[in-house]
Length: 164
Image (cartoon, rainbow, N blue to C red; front, side):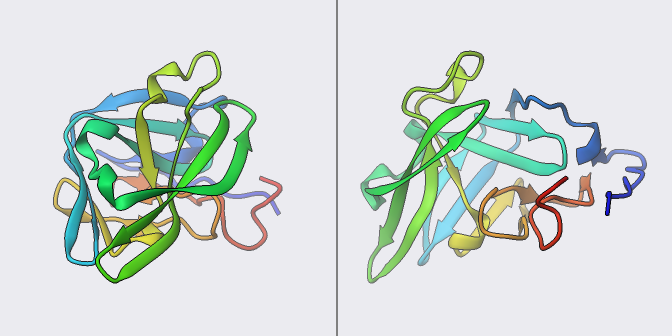
């Protein structure tokens, strides 16, 4: 079944208007990630990756991440556009979230700006915010998009959307 694009309305974006291959753009919005009562990332210098059918993914500069809470993981994935992603496990106090974030140590051509930036799965931390709005996690356990009230779908990631 093919998805039916939701008309975005004023001040909103449809993920079906996002490009493929993905576009990377700067975002001045405040992006925060919280886990186990601590702010693990806080920036107004995020990069936003936009790809057809996906909610935006926010990449936080390493300088704005509490990297002391991150431990390398053995998990890796491959994006046909951005290259090989490495993952990190988040540990704060007595809580751990396995493979909570990823990064591109050597991004593919055209995506070099993602180097030294981390993307967090909203579903694997306690809360993510864009400005002061709580983020809803993209359905599924692969893509890691951040859903806010200014984006409309339908969004890839849930059951039956793999072929979109």
